[in-house]
Amino acid sequence: MKIMVVGGGGREHAIIKKIKENPSVEKIYALPGNGGMSGDAELVNIGAKDIDSIVKFAVDNSIDFAVVAPDDPLVLGAVDALNEVGIKCFGPNKAAAIIEGSKAFSKNLMKKYNIPTAEFEIFDNAEAALSYLDTAPIPTVIKADGLALGKGVIIAETREAAKDAVKSIMEEKIFGDSGNNIVIEEFLTGPEVSVLSFTDGNVVVPMISSMDHKRALDNDKGLNTGGMGTIAPNPYYTADIAKECMDKIFIPTINAMKAENRTFKGCLYFGLMLTPKGPKVIEYNCRFGDPETQVVLPLLESDLLDIMIAVADGCLTENMVKFSQKSACCVVMASNGYPVKYESGFEITVDSDFDDNLYVAGAKLSGDKLLTAGGRVLGVTAVENTLGEAINKAYSSVKKVRFANAFYRNDIGAKAMSVIKEEK
Ligand code: AMP
Ligand code: GLY
Image (cartoon, rainbow, N blue to C red):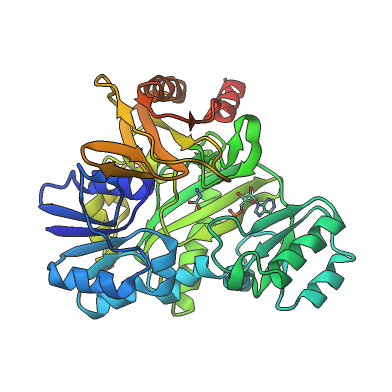
């Protein structure tokens, strides 16, 4: 089979490496991919948002199956466009991708179908939002309605900060048109859990749970990033909580989307907060998480491509998806200064005794050298019998990957380890 993967980061690299395990795969193209994946896929210089060129490439190259991984092309309708020319895809169509594309949509969906989430109000003009904030409970959370590279959420500790956030999103348009509407919601507390799931629109099969580390610096200090590391499974997510989430969140969400004529097929990502009043949805993503995928897929024992095809064909079953009992830790190596200002173009070298998973997010080839070309450069994932071992192994492997100005957090998994120790 000829496979095409749309996207170019560490998540896509993890997807490509897993798909490659299927013996019927002859060739994988990455659009655009990045230089660090050139050993695993043929890179095609087409941007992930260039839907017309993606469709043309797929037709010209007789692609048998496409995986659309990032949010932008999904929300823009890449799957609809590929399906129209007869190309089978993994990923939701445009009507379903709105679950991530519009927070106002997803909040209203949860309200209508009684799916637990933070209390909220939606505003389409700054004046009404500002006057609501005169009496709203503080702290409060302000969210731009549309996609904002994961940056469209502001947690305001004071009334003034909340009002400033509304002004910058709705008047100064710091997130562009994504801020035409905003959601103002209740501030929740509790541990966060990411649960990715496979769903064909009828059956939903959760993957192993994971924990992201979004802040740039140790001890959750510094700015929010795209994710500085992950571990799986997430020790806060017990079997009882998993059952509650299945009954109150996962199945109701799949059924709600079907009832709205927006049947969701693909990977639905549940961003959950385990509050004192039970698990609540913080966000839905219409795709695999990054860097969650880099710990979840190495633990998948089943064949990823077979699952993806079953999702597309609407014949997913629970027993198709099996996870290992092991644990995984991914440490992201970034360019110093990320997420604000950083330099690129430094050579990346990997010691010959490196024996873990390397998922490259931001690199380019220059002759036979691999150079850094992004804020998050790569992720190193180790899989071991216990989480403690996986963390130690990931950090010893990180030392075998070298580039100038590299920086990474030193405490990925530390919070999870403290929970595991408390339980003992
Ligand atoms: P999101 O982009 O929706 O994932 O939000 C980014 C981060 O903001 C989340 O991972 C949470 O840590 C935090 N957050 C979002 N919504 C809330 C909320 N209602 N209460 C507390 N924290 C929140
Ligand atoms: N790691 C969070 C996300 O993919 O949105």
